[in-house]
Length: 249
Image 1: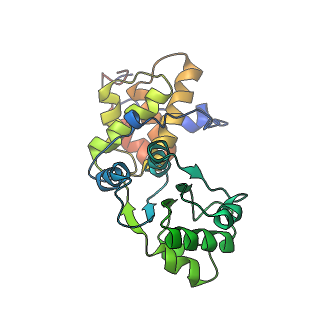
Image 2: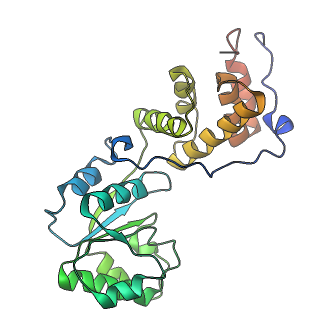
């Protein structure tokens, strides 16, 4: 590609591109990326069992690492997972076994089961870790009883917003796929993408699929086409102007 040439429209070459989100990401403690946006939550997880309150809530957007933190804590504490089918029984049985309630605001939990579970945890000082994407006030429950108890939890917000954290996230996402990507490609992505963790997940999957289709590595050309596909026609025109003689890098 020469200076002045346009980046081709990726929607024309990948009209039926399907995103394979079925890879198995690593949830090992050593793979968790610690930064300014999650350091307090990470430190709290590792402070267990010296918790001042039995309830902890980790809140943040999709892809910010809430479930990864919960998995780390489950390993540290020996916690079991309370799922919609078991929450009521766990509350009824009681005990001190630590519990994780992942996706509190999205999984199909019965409100009464969660209410009893939080009550039992507070009554018996049973450690319970909740994760949610939305703040408590936006949880889809019909009464304030459950929300009032959840508001008593120690709350930690996690987010990935800095260039460094997003870059590290791409390194991890590509590492989960056993794909090596040059740092300049990651820097190119981070400087132009929508700054949301979930967008990094989508872009990593999209570029991995594009590279597999072409039988080659993930390059800046692929990165530009993936960004254009996500950002729209205006971004395609802008990206086309940024490429010169090194467009094949």
